[in-house]
Image (cartoon, rainbow, N blue to C red; front, side, top):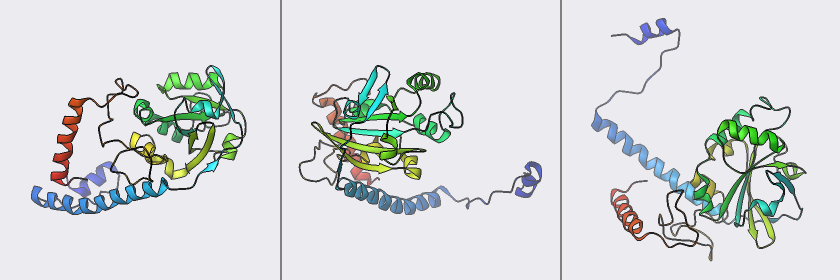
Length: 261
């Protein structure tokens, strides 16, 4: 058997100081102990999202102009008819390391993690990437990297006005008829968590829109799990499939009985 010292001499790397090796029973006890702390963190994350839904909004007064594959677009156009809009400023423009073949490495990692947008769209939410690169270069990049999210070109002071004059950042907006409000913003390490449907919804003013959430009075909420669907099967305004209602009810009951996260 190779010892840690022998392994270190062979590989030239410092030997790992591994955790104790225990029985399955001891391992399960350790997992249950850690689960208590993980549940605390989960509840704290839910509480933070509830506070976020109560943050004040600010009106967007300026008319911003973007370029899309088919021409000029306003900020209102980016909503694509929905009430919520998430705009990620990806760092892709002349001067960025990798230009024009690649965007910023960190922004590219974010793009690689974006879940199927049909699930966000089903919650009245649109996700758009925005950069200063011309549309021709954005189109080439998307095709090369296999990305499908809407991606527009910034043509004015949008990035500077909303805290993303350089690098990256995620802004959230809400549309009430013709009025647009800025509701939230994250950047730096805050962007690390982005990509998944739940994390995106948790930074929007309406949240996941499920009945268990602590949301202000009058916010839209539907039964938990029931709106979920295959990404190719969402139909706007359709009632939840009764078979899925039965399956999800049974799953939720089992989940509660097992006291999971």
